[in-house]
Image (cartoon, rainbow, N blue to C red):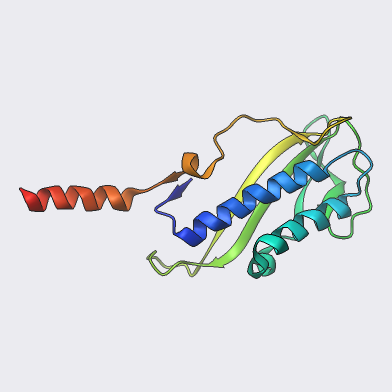
Length: 158
């Protein structure tokens, strides 16, 4: 959830959504996990190359039937592991240690933004997202500043 996000934060969130789409399109049987990582990174480079320094070293991993992570099936640059049909992956996309926007007060200088998803690898199509949650920007962002400004204006008019 984003509260009073800046335009830059909106753009960053939209980048995460596009990265998820790129991963789902790339997670097909026979693909290498290193290749999936490279395609997601390339998608980000094409959208906004200044975000590359914040790109994570891992984008998730396969899950065992017990839903425990499979450490040999990490989505990382050097992974040679092969995607197989009917596998389940936990995807985790984020940008970490981003400089905090000036409009936000507080003791921290940085913030992070992340989305996560569980997907099922289909035998014949792109990976299928397994959860149904609101994910579009307008569903997860809230503007409280505008409400405060409107309330203040009404009070001043009275």
